Image (tube, rainbow, N blue to C red; front, side, top):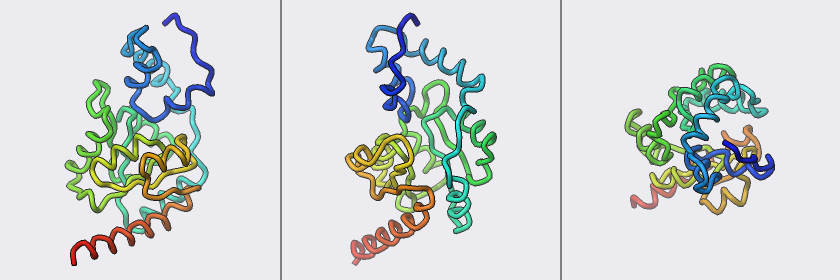
Length: 197
């Protein structure tokens, strides 16, 4: 697009939020975000989406949660068409009862709207759900529905970002998630019990 790319160390903020929004901000009005998105998706869909590695311990964490009888759903800002390819390629799809993502036409780019869609489609009550995420966008979108978020410190957001956004708990490693979820669920049960008395 005739512009120099910022150095990679200055682009960490772009990972997580919807790309339309990020490209709009990155271009600062001096380019078409839709054109940038087309360039990005052309490269990403041709193989860039598979140039990743699964975090150590992620498979085991997902298996432990599923083994505990939990239904897991992927809720991502990535387009669903890409997310399902990634799940399949990295042998993650068996862990999930369903996958939800943005549509290529920008529907569900707003993660709060995507969560509402997931809750309705799966007939889930917000009080029975916990989000696991690594960016403030995950926390803020879940908070719109009174859903607590476990902040994943092994991801991109970091402790300060997640705390400021209001994460209910933080985990250093994927292996910490099952016990943190259990503790968070127990706290929720106690508070609902007290509220109901």
